[in-house]
Length: 453
Ligand code: TRP
Image (cartoon, helix red, strand yellow):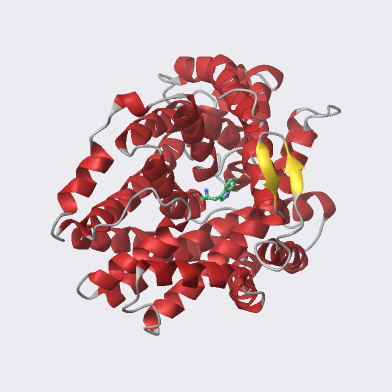
């Protein structure tokens, strides 16, 4: 039998896992959630969610994946033979399908905005005109689909090449580029006149703004941003050598992801305030407000182009991790070749994504009722079912699996490489994985159904 692939180096794995985590969730979603939920107070709650719950679930995923050395479904079959726990992995593969379908659409918008910026068609307009451009892009039937096809083509192309020559190689190039571009944008934003107001909005917490809704929003965001609950990190962990330190790897990935989110806010809010625009613009923050900000800043074309390239890169390194989760399953369990799995599944996901894209425009009349929400178009349905139901449920099941079924003793053994690494933090992790994380995640789930919050 062919030997299963492995990461080429420790740093390559870290870049790939951070590349999965750092994506639209950090650069597009985190700043607008913070802007809508009162700035610094949200950031504070988010940090707690990431380091207590997110890190806990990531350690569980890494441990399960590396112990089994298989895809998301095969790992559960191997560690709990004859049980129904493989369904956790199956839910993850389903979530991967759904997330990548709409993620590819937004990835396509990022590419479109890069080209629009470079071609100068975003120069010298009013905020209303920027709003119109965004709204007509997402409803126009053909234009967003062409960009989505390009984005998904790049994603599939990288995954076809496999772990070392595809995912690892590209992550090592794209991740440092993302941090460099973010730093340049921060310096630009902070040196604009009037940037201070944005800085204090973002960094001075007003704790009266914290309520149930903010806490639950922060938790859901932590899951999505860290790529948890779906088996992505489990799959990436399965390509890791037995010598690697899972504890420091998880801490590094969580720290890099959080740093990227915080830096994205630092790049965006000072510039938004300096140009006299409002921070609470929801999902349009990046696509409507930022072009207006770049338009008013010296050398804005250059900085705008850098920003949208950054967004597209970040989306790409995340999209490949989602596709890899599906491909690993077909390879490990059904014996498909990497190439046919990537192309066939990538193709089907892209087709579902076309439906997502059309559901924002010509098919927006078709909606589905969903508990706790207004009727949803297909795009939002994929987002809500995956992020608010499948991911938290997956995270919950992985904690219960690691804590009670596979048992913490076995997880601890994996996390200390058979007792050779420090176990200083494991007593705390054991409490978090068995009690704290499950309870908190159940609350998030109930909120998704509109029961609490
Ligand atoms: N974390 C990525 C982002 O922030 C998206 C992502 C990649 C993801 N893989 C995932 C989300 C797995 C949930 C589950 O954009």
